[in-house]
Amino acid sequence: MRKRRGSVAFPAVVVVAITSAVSASADEPFRLLSAKEIRLKVIGRDLTDGVHWSWYYRADGTLVSVEMGKQRLGSWKIEDNKLCSPSGRNRQMECYEVWASGKNISLRYFADMPTIAGVVTPHTTP
Image 1 (cartoon, rainbow, N blue to C red):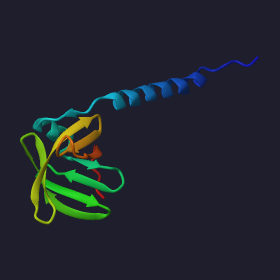
Image 2: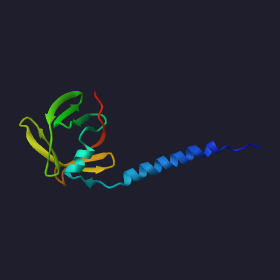
Image 3: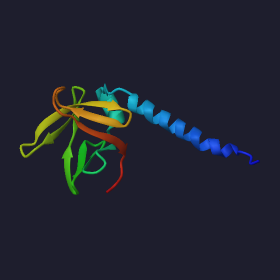
């Protein structure tokens, strides 16, 4: 008769623990961040979709964006609990509410408009 080792059950326990942690994170509802929370959650980190674009909000107000391999420098500010940066050729300021669920971030211009969805990650130098 073959004895069962305790280590056989260990991977199953780890899988259950990891699955539970992922489920808890996935079930966390998005919530609107205040100016202070935006600073803590986004500033000094990268906001990215993981493939096509990455935006690095430096603490000095500089926005370093890399979109499809092309790097640009811009600026950002927080105004009325919204994250703002100039956009387009006219450099008009666009401001977004910042909603978060764990590492997931959703930038929302208006509630009924499509969102910009990404994740916050520690900053990496390209």
